Amino acid sequence: MRSSLFLLRCGAAFYTSAMELVNLQNATELLGLTPAQLQELMQKLNEKPFRARQLYANLFRRRLLNFEAMTDLPKTLRRKLADHTIITRTRIEKVFVASDGTRRFLLRLFDGCEVEAVFMPEDHRDTICISSQVGCPLACDFCMTGVFGLKRNMSAAEIVAQVIIVLNAVYGAGNETPHGTNIVMMGMGEPLLNYDNAMKAVRLFADEEGLQIAPRRVTLSTAGIVPRLYDMAQEAIRPRLAISLTAANDELRNRLFPINRKYPLAVLLAACRAYPLSERERLTFEYVMLKEVNDSDKDARQLIRLLAGVKAKVNLIPHNPAPELPYLASSEERILAFQKILVAAGLPAFIRRPRGQDIAAACGQLAARHQANA
Ligand code: SAH
Image 1 (cartoon, rainbow, N blue to C red):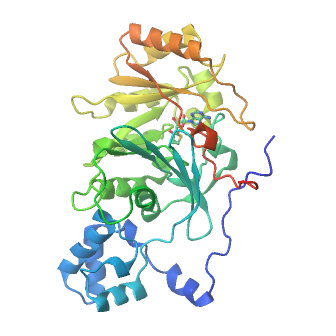
Image 2 (image 1 turned 180 degrees about the vertical axis):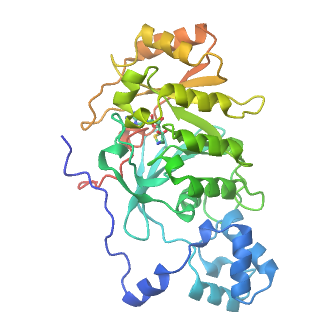
Image 3 (image 1 turned 135 degrees about the vertical axis):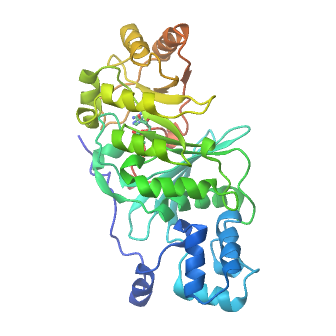
């Protein structure tokens, strides 16, 4: 049964004054603009092109989120920018900190919609898990985000703002992105159903003058929107690709992923085989381990056959159960046995350690749930 505690909240009044609302609603958020678009903006404001480069560095390299802090810009320009533009309207609503150091950020967008981003620290690197849509239309049977359906796509600015806001909360503003920052587009939503904005965000992450997060440090995870996989293959700057597989036959995958009826496994795997990979790159196949549903030795052998000839690695993800979801987690022993079968067949397989479980930040738990008692 779906709990009434869980709501996707949108449309709540956000601005206090009507004037402010009128001004800001038409403004483009600067965190979604490319260097070229910032140049156009400066032109409109009758400013020299080099001001665009300065502004770009302030926004993306130093992550300054207010014009006052941009002291290399003249005061008059700062005022002009404040009058005519807006950097981001995304705000932190709440932060949950887990015992393993994972932090879950509940973020509020300009229209009151809420999304989540998760910061996961490790010894030599950090990973930030970001959302691409408010909710998700795919309704996968084992995922909390799907319980509520899709509210809307996120803009490129909103996608990028998550990374900047999280980095600032952890490291403060004013410094370059720490080396070894990784991004996974595995939060709420299906990034390939918001293709243009997701790819624009990847290009903004990658920019050497800006955030400097190389595409090999960005992983986009998809349930398999096949035509967009062919589009992605054509992109000059493309992230690493992860496919949420979780079932190695169509009968089971149809049940778990309604989208599989549109793009069945043969079609999905053909797109995977056609996907261009660099020499050392492999496609990641995510496989959520669901007790007595997809975790038998037979399932492992079926998975090996399915991925034969694909440059693949498999991430086994322990299922994160929730009262709304009709599945249980496989035991650790079962996951280890399953992994052993894959590895013995020459298929690299890793077990993903769940992060932030005590704050509902783990895979498939992100739902922007409105927690009455939190
Ligand atoms: N729509 C994209 C990205 C969001 S889901 C996709 O489908 O890949 C990100 C990852 O979380 C996917 O690999 C998905 O299979 C996994 N996931 C979803 N629900 C989960 C759950 N309850 N427990 C563990 N992993 C889950």
